[in-house]
Image (cartoon, rainbow, N blue to C red; front, side, top):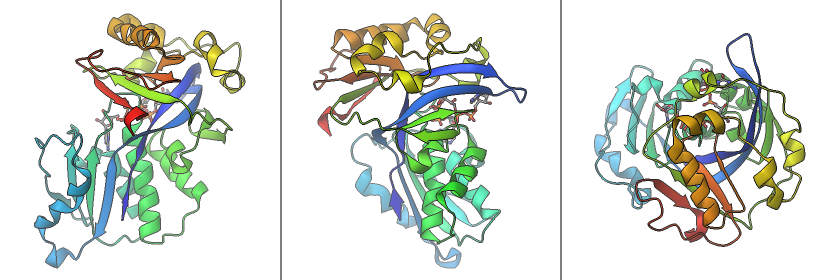
Length: 302
Ligand SMILES: C[C@](O)(CO)[C@H](O)COP(=O)(O)OP(=O)(O)OC[C@H]1O[C@@H](n2ccc(N)nc2=O)[C@H](O)[C@@H]1O
Ligand SMILES: Nc1ncnc2c1ncn2[C@@H]1O[C@H](COP(=O)(O)OP(=O)(O)OP(=O)(O)O)[C@@H](O)[C@H]1O
């Protein structure tokens, strides 16, 4: 069974207060993006497992897969084999969000041995929630593949244990988020007629370090109200509180935002704690050669 975990962006982000557990209460609007990883699970018989089945994801590996990172094989006594590909993720296998999701459900239910294939196309340390999305989609995939019987609400609760952003990806619909980002209210916001551009420079921003730079503040107007106003006024109303300290540390990000406006964006902002800057366009953006060192994605050619 295969699924395609997508990225998110934050349309505005207010960091409201610091909590006693070290986390921050925030408000933001999550909006799903068409940039996707690919995640596949295949039940295996451990006795007859054949590593040559590594080819399974080849049909989605064409565009963007640079071929430099061959599938690596690993396993553990809990009964999975993990085959990551695409952009390499640092760290131990048990630190991968997909494996954290597997381990979480495996402590609750009996899950048969599986091969897990993850093709990474969403940049990480990017404010795009790629790891959170992989984890949430893994929960949904396991629930469906092995009829575990969890409700959407139960899956959201599991997801919230894996990361503040994770719960959003269970329903994966435009949502106003509050609390630490895990309390969600679906909102009626459809931006399907617009074009999106995501621009990520060749450096990452640590979410933890970004929060440490913030002095929380109560917003003058809730993002829920600002989002109801026409997109044309968002430029002067909708803010991401991370931008001031992060742009100070990384001026290149401010330049990217300015360039997106120069190219005709009706709204541009940093997503999450960075380092991706997104632009919302009424016409397909022409960004060739404008951001030579950056990862650039747009839905204009989809
Ligand atoms: C920046 C956002 O992406 C905006 O949507 C999220 O708030 C971050 O969500 P996330 O990456 O899922 O965050 P987690 O993996 O749960 O937390 C990473 C670190 O960010 C900080 N953190 C995260 C969320 C939050 N509401 N307050 C925080 O202070 C904590 O120091 C935490 O140790
Ligand atoms: N499957 C995964 N995909 C991406 N990153 C992962 C994954 N598993 C673990 N990580 C680790 O989690 C870190 C955060 O990745 P992720 O893409 O979720 O966050 P982000 O881009 O900072 O987005 P946000 O701040 O919006 O949550 C990465 O730096 C990486 O080391």
